Length: 222
Image (cartoon, rainbow, N blue to C red; front, top):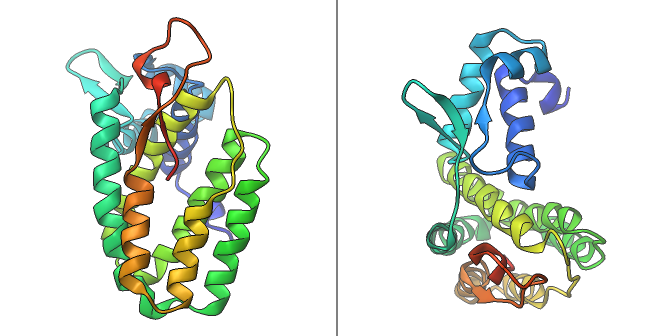
């Protein structure tokens, strides 16, 4: 039985809304109307409220007193915070995962990197990139840490889609391969430091529009 088949109504609603928020389909500042969403998903108000609380826990929505929930805004300061947290926490997870990484896992991670290199869209690349990180970090067997990292990766994806919605640029991910090479050679600290630098890097980029927002002038690759 697949994980999705066992989802509660609340989890399914939260997952669907989170995907729409991260992709930009539901833009920042949008009010999440409980009645409308209940009708949309054919659910009662109870699972919808639970879904809203899950979105709030992920930092994707906020509860405005007496006004309900709205999609949160985001800025460059938040991007820097997310990148720094990922840098430290993913390195920690990899350090604990290293002893449990098998050749099969590393081969699958390299295959995921190849899919990212060949991605035609930013959404395809983000899915392949996240799969790479999940493969090498999951063996740490620290569920609370992995849940935190997953939330940070979701936040990163939101920035990524905002920055690259107009002009996606495919690229070869040399850092992923450097991480895998270090892991195969048993150089764990080198792999951890490379990963930390990889997910913590933020750079400026030329915008596709003259009147660029701050989000569009930054990029992340992790």
